[in-house]
Length: 364
Image (cartoon, rainbow, N blue to C red; front, side, top):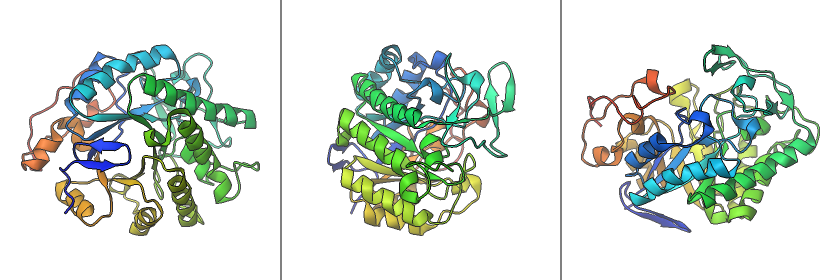
């Protein structure tokens, strides 16, 4: 019987357990560079078989939030080496999540020359229409510019180059962020993509950017080092369901399966948004994708173990529980209490709430 705490091996994935640390924006990358504090943070959580980092931008255009990391030049890539070395010393594997924020951005958070780009010139709706800017507080998100065909093509190349830089920096692979309302997800959804060229219109056309980015990344670093994250039915950052959504994600899963990527990672944010995600879409992904399937969404030990045992997923990703419980795997194994994180420190600079946290107070 499969167990959450047993090693997992499939393809090039050789993990000490089936627990994944989910990607979480933490906004500690001063100057958009990885640093010693981040290395300590990830090393503390290396009990997980696989760590997926917070989203790192592949472009000056994709650094939408304050203090998120980037990896589009060699200096940025070199800054990540301390992180990958620290995690590998603890026996865990680490993938870099590549996240281009697209229209979820404020121009004041972008480096010089950066522009707020999107599939179409359609802004984000409330309650997601404000963005924090250091020194100025919450400001209305900047209006995006519709990407030209040339900009789409150059963005695909940016993803591939970031993947190459990530491998040079010691990462075991990369995860392409196609979820939660960021650039790739904006192309997938007709609410944000009203293009009339080959990247808009039908569900297959709207899926083209994701699939072309995936292919370019595979060509750059190999299929065994590429994962993809999606969030069908997710409403974060003004996304949501649309006509034909099931057929589109079935198509995506089938295409990614044919490409032979390392894993497919589905985020279910319904516990946070209170908008349900039908179980049928998870069943579709399981049926159409024969590689490693990661599920993420408000899991606890028992629910994670159940879904592993029933074959609904191969790996389970935990997000928020890792924030205040760096030794989450041990705590779940031994049924030890869990600490509750301080949400006021989720995105603030410094160690408090990041590498230092309150004592455990709640049972696992």
